[in-house]
Length: 290
Ligand code: ASP
Image 1 (cartoon, rainbow, N blue to C red):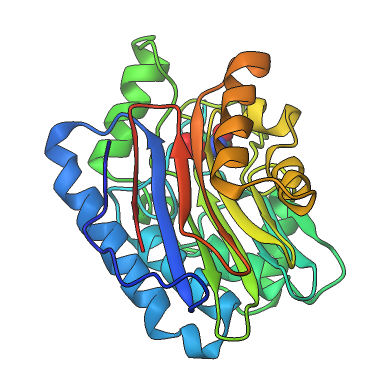
Image 2 (cartoon, rainbow, N blue to C red):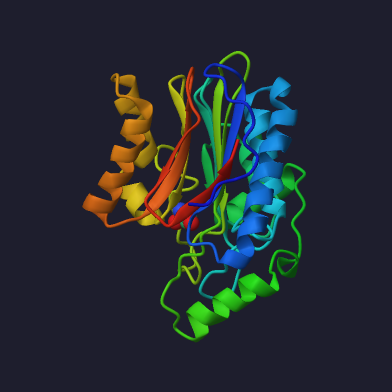
């Protein structure tokens, strides 16, 4: 288990920011950085929780996008041709608005672009069109090399050039937040899997799969994206809680179902309107903090 050190007070119905730094196996030499990164992200979110759940969740994710230890923004996994291709989404539970980008080019904070899309009519924009939308709305594209680190380049070399076994990068980042009014938000950001087919999109930016929020709960998932997409993971989990299920139990059941019926591993964090933090994983660990 990888546990963040940033555990702040968590009264059942108080404002709360809960983050994850991806499900998977983190090498022991990266564990301290994973823990500290989660803690800093949760604190950054908590610092702006007065501005609302959306601001808090996105602020937390931005911190992790900047931290090269995670697979989002700087240090993200590279696709088959060694290019950056980023997925992110934000969903506001109070308004049932969502914004997402997928197969996005090199931008430092994909979650900020998703946040800007929250109140626009397209829910999800892909590829070159997402780049164009971001540029037209004042976001700055950076040289791809700014986001590629020695670690992400070495991982690409191992998987794509040397046929290494696992293309799972781990390190996807996400946050769920609940503000003083009980409004919920979920935000998730990733570079996806190492050596993925150009244009491949995982669960992260898909509303109801890797990211979801309504008035019942906010969920950010991480793991083998195809399985989470096929299971419509987050939306079904929300429905189960709406129907009266106990949140932690339903979360664990939903992850067990992903493993049993779709052959996928992963984890998720969740807040409900009056409960949490809830978290579970079927991998070796999932770094997190609140
Ligand atoms: N779910 C992400 C994807 O498949 C990867 C991860 O969470 O590690 O793109």
